[in-house]
Image (cartoon, rainbow, N blue to C red; front, top):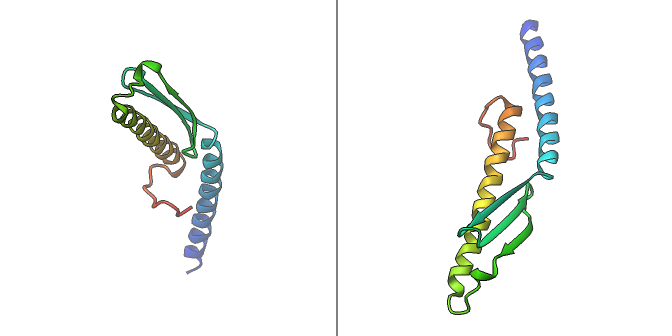
Length: 108
C-alpha cells in the first residue's frame, strides 16, 4: 500500500515540475514573434506570442481605391496566417515541455 504512495508522490513532483516548466515557457513565448507576408509582399504582419500585432506593413502598390476588398482580404489573410503560426509555435514548444502529451488547453 505504501509503495503506491511513493509512486504518487513521485508523479506529483513530476507534474509540479512540468507546470513550472510550462509557465516559464509561456512567459518566454510571449516575447517571441512570427512574421508573415502575403500577396507577394503586399502585406506583412509581425505578431508576438500573445497574438498582438507588433507591426503591419502595406506596400503602396497594394492600395487600390477601386479594390478595397482585395486589400482587406490580404490583411485578413496575413493576420490569420500569423495567428496560425503562433499556435503552431506554442504547440511545438509546449510539446517539448510535456514530452508530447496532448494536454487540453488551460490544464496548466
